[in-house]
Image (cartoon, rainbow, N blue to C red; front, side):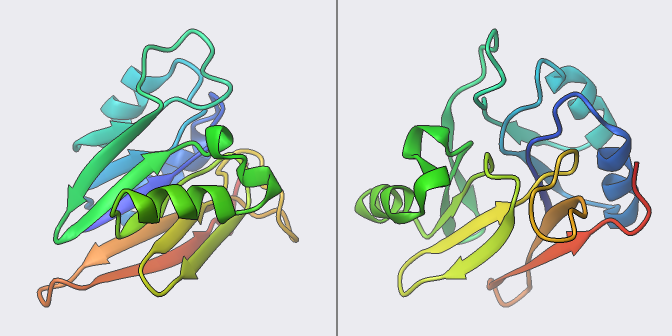
Length: 163
């Protein structure tokens, strides 16, 4: 199973289209918020199941603020992160995810990609395809692959030619 994980597209879809083309075929697209009302357009672009949550810029959205997903053998919490104060650090979101028995927590909001392998929890942020904030400011996304052995592997990817 191959899952493309993105966040913070902010109505700019050229880079999302490029990531979708680079990773095709995918089995699922997870969008971690700040789609700004473009859920239908993103779903059409993806051409596969879409799981999406609301972000702080999704003001008039009826999207859920978080979702629980079963991805292979992994229980995953997806959220934008702003309700867990991720700009101030990861302690609050990790504590919540661990207390609720999740194996993986995915969030956006910071526009900075990261993977953190903890003892009981994997914490993921794909960064932003539209407005990256990390050093070098390259648009980023993440790929999650669940192999035949049932184990998940994660990779942060960066667009080389971007808009």
